Length: 428
Image (cartoon, rainbow, N blue to C red; front, side, top):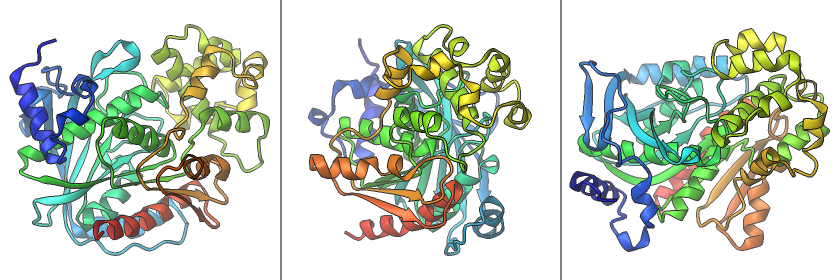
């Protein structure tokens, strides 16, 4: 394949931004990520405030959060989100918020071209070089509770207030199937998650060049599904030789095969009532992305098949679907499907095993946070990278317990604590 000269120039500029202009270190697959291969704009046409940059990337300013607005997020809005007792330092800078649209490809579909969206948050600090946090968001049932719609996403707003309000740039991919994406939800689909995050990062680099901003050290952060996304994204970045200063994850489901077995065969009274909803997203996504025909028909009990499909396709909201769904995953799934989980020999269960997010020798320091009252991700699952990295001689991986913290409380603590850790690393 012959690459247009503008494509290669754009790639060189972006790699220079990351201090990565050592092409001999980067596999040729970097050039095939799709971010630079398709020139068709992914953005809606006709928007007056839309700005186009090379390689099909567009962006638009969607809001500016004032310091007062950021401090409102850190106080009253935080209290509405979680009752976990945590305080944050006041924001220092207003933050400009840019919605980015970018071309990408779907690896599971023979690299079929697609479009996706995400957010770039830029503090008005006066600096032209800033550290960057790539935040991978947690599970949402709608298309718009994502980074590119920050007013609909409290987790995104908290990251903006805590990090961008203190001088970090923050980026976040919506993932395929969310935001402006025309695809179905790619929930916990490994290669597509890696692709969406990687191409969002490269798109944000292109926008940063246009804004005359330079990237300092890159950090990764994520919560829940986003913790898993952060781990598989980190794996992708390390495979490409792109350095990450550190990563922090909260309530990360590092082994989906193990956690599904835990939810099915060892349920606990405090398990979240929305776990069946997670199974609906994940099983539907695997049917769509991995081409597993009739997987949902074999998985869900007949009385739940229609509502499960409607929820996955965003034809109904979770508020509408939740009361009609069982509270335990066992009551949602058929007995024969559950029986296959023990040995994991079917195609679905084998793919779930392959979706693990921790079994490689990492070179990036990691903090993984887990709550002792988390109703979704048990401590054992969240801390799998700790013992594994020690066993294989990898980078430091530290498990941090958050006392009296449920799923949201773990996130609230982690965001505050990881900021202190990232700040310390910037001085070294």
